[in-house]
Image 1 (cartoon, rainbow, N blue to C red):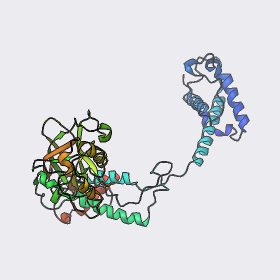
Image 2 (cartoon, rainbow, N blue to C red):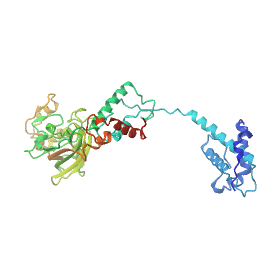
Image 3 (spheres, rainbow, N blue to C red):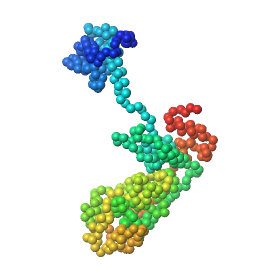
Length: 441
């Protein structure tokens, strides 16, 4: 039968200022008298062995045992009712008070060692995720936090409150980021018209002029453009005249007709450095010309689609991707020869001695671009692995609804400016989403 001990509220019966040794002796005497008959090392009923339990709250194992003993005493479960050796009610109350006081002292000491909770601002990653969720923004390339100062790390983490300083500069960039985000989310007016661009080989550029990264591009009788390397100096194929540029943020359909050639070539594989068994991989990269040139790698690059190109026939490869306004699509042979220039220098004297490399070498080293290259061209004789682009199609933007989901999530379906008198409702809805609670007046 469970026993309720009202004495535990009478704390005056126990001297809470006992010395540590006295408290330990009091605990051990109680344990020996009423617990160890069933819970010593030899007996250990219920898998409970308290024979070596000490009155030491700093020790995790002891603390676990002490907590379990306190729980059983409070519940009146132990010692069991059929035990011949029963403690008096005042003894139980004193032990409950002793253990409770011990836990209180331990927890207060632990709390004093902890630093106070500090409020902090969101780091850049958290800010991006929060803004995209609040405003219903799609895509992975939009970054409203790009102007923020770098998040300082403390012990490898960038979530430390002391390091995430809310400076005047950060406040200014936060306002700029907010305006940028709202401009991205809210779409006034009619749905943009869909463009349908057909990009032919000549639209990718020719081989008459040598630009950085253009060494191995060739328009072959208006049939295809070849990508022959993956090194940083030659691996990007943009289109002319913005034919692969997003005029508005939205989804775009991209189709590329391509095949691959040159898997079995006569060159030294150690020089070409391409796995002959691996598939030819074509990447579609989204890049922002405001960050860096579309012809060179930059920090805005983001892979939006990857295709394994068939080296037996010309096939069509399709993807629907989200593009933010102003971004361009670049084609890249991902796993082609990594250092095509070095390969050409080593291979051509052996396999193509008739080829005059003078014009090509001058084109590499000249500083005034574009530099006119004289035929024959490297691509006329190169037999290494390469991907042929026969044409591409680019259409968009496409939307499931208009206004788009981001507009609806931010201000509702209204298309009136500014908000057509619904500002209060718009602000209330936004605040409740942001703070996940009901807004009050």
